[in-house]
Length: 160
Image (cartoon, rainbow, N blue to C red; front, side, top):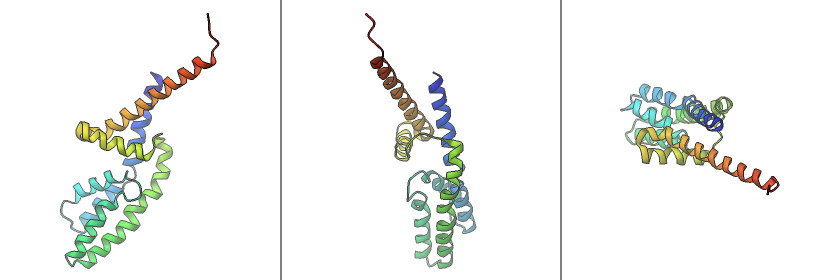
């Protein structure tokens, strides 16, 4: 039970620190507000949520916004969105996540984390974004415990 408690604590801390403290959603929301983008706050939240997706992450949100601004002949706003997106929103992840990852110490691959978040959302709704990774991490810990027990039994002499 102690290992399950530690795994639960590690996962919660890792999710909050690793994702929450990267500030990508906050920076994006501020940029959207400054550029008078409609629905800036929900788009900022969406940008923060997509930050967990490797490589393309936040670009899923801010690139279409920049394209839409360009197509609406708002070239200055489109250019600003592109610059802020590349320089601030996308790069803040590279700068801060490595610092915060030491605090978070989530022992789960990015792919597994992403799948567990979206699977959790599919099964449980919004709460699944947190409960999915926790359930997967606890299941992983349970499998490790079973493997350790089996390995321990193999190395002990048979008592007859």
